[in-house]
Image (cartoon, rainbow, N blue to C red; front, side, top):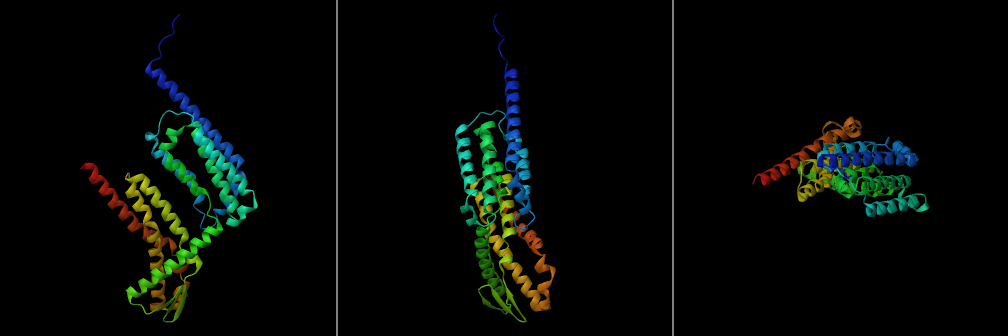
Length: 302
């Protein structure tokens, strides 16, 4: 007896069922990884209580949302891709070994947690290559790579970045004071204004808001722009924009102290005004995004 030929509809149904099983296998793999990395994930949750790392627990949900938004562009079929999976698995294993050694402490007390979270993300990606395949992972490259932001910044790296941002913000604030005609004696991170001496401390570097602004620019570039150079422009402007925002904040605080008295240094503008200036920095970022998007749309129509 001859078997009946398989129709296109039947073949599509078989492929769809196979892909659903692979997605289920990937979900199971992620659950297994969460159980295996339960302790570093708990350490990450404790770090999320601090200002700098409060975003880390939102990263998986943002990645999941981006995959959901782009679901129609993702392949409906999958094949196992062993080579990238083995490479990522080997890198993750190396990170685990380093995290459990004394060298990880050179990065600070968050060093082992950061390395273990990176290993976790690497194994998630390795499972994606095994279960979903290289074409699917290539199509979902940005949402999957965005998971890297789950890893907390090690203390040593934070210290050096904060120091650089502090110096850059102080220089920018000095330029703003000169531009505004405010009498000031500038010496490094110190500003002697009429009636008050202001020091730009390490805590005033604006690293958290700049880091969040950087992630916002990445997401906006991915969702609204298609040209690589336009995406690069939007992301590259974040660092100078963060420095200008911080320098402007120092100018505003210094001007208020000169105009209304040194007690203004103790008001909410200094201690809790960061979100206000962060929102203000979003305005030029989104204006640039709109300009880049319009340029891209005009090119498409042409």
